[in-house]
Image (cartoon, rainbow, N blue to C red):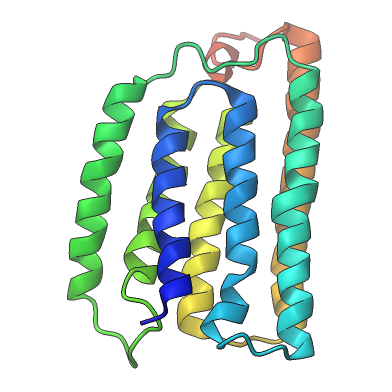
Length: 214
């Protein structure tokens, strides 16, 4: 058991629940940024703070992209938007938190049934990774605004990242950085799309786009 890893996992759970219950987009961006910073330290923690060059560089890149670059891009997009809140989501915030709590319990149960090749550094990593993935998916399908859906994509990727770091261990740096580059391009493109949607239609509610007719 790794106490530092457990603290990060508990922090992820709390921030996921906060994201499910928040309407202010600026606050949601900050919580996703905090998740990215916390996850940036995870490779070092799981390797007993081994200051190997590969791990240190990867952690710096993760913290820089997830904690600084992505939030900066999203905040810049947010400043151009007419609305700063997710006013009418498909699923209300109270129900979202209840659904998130139930999902967390299910993820805990599911992870306890899965066989692993070797003991994990923290028993919370796998269930919390699953919960983070499900939280991201929930944000994507239950929110109307494109910016919130982008945040859901980032949360989902945070869960995949946590699961991969916990189980796979050390990978070639080029593979890891290649994955991060894909994420960077995706967020960059989605930010541009949100800006143009807002400029053309004065809103970023994706449900209203389905009403357009050619």
